[in-house]
Length: 134
Image 1 (cartoon, rainbow, N blue to C red):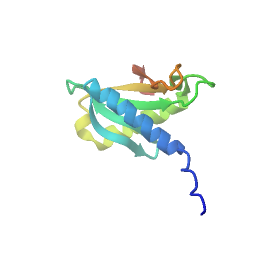
Image 2 (tube, helix red, strand yellow; image 1 turned 135 degrees about the vertical axis):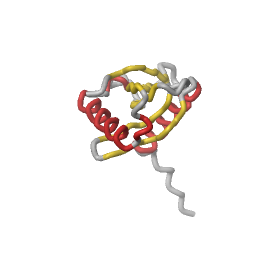
Image 3 (tube, rainbow, N blue to C red; image 1 turned 60 degrees about the horizontal axis):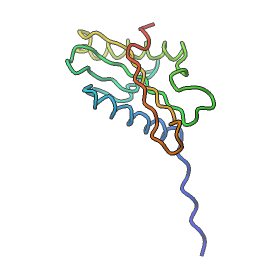
């Protein structure tokens, strides 16, 4: 009887979705409210668009993850070019969602790195005001 193939390894898209879901749970536990997930436009993407608990600050979140620590930490992967793409996407969001313009906005990063302990839970680091609108 032929063996069934092993399940395919997770794609980078699957890994990214899992990281975004982990980041979302972390932020919601802190009281933030999700408005939009994966806001995309031609210029770029914002992983999570959220409101702070008081509803006065629009929190634009970039999620970064690493499955291995050989090449540095996840937060270090946010280049100036990535910041610019996030900024352009934020401008587009504010142009298309007029009701959000009254809010202050900030860019946060949620970095997810592997645990230093074998088999341990990944480390989630929330960096508030990680960068400013370019």
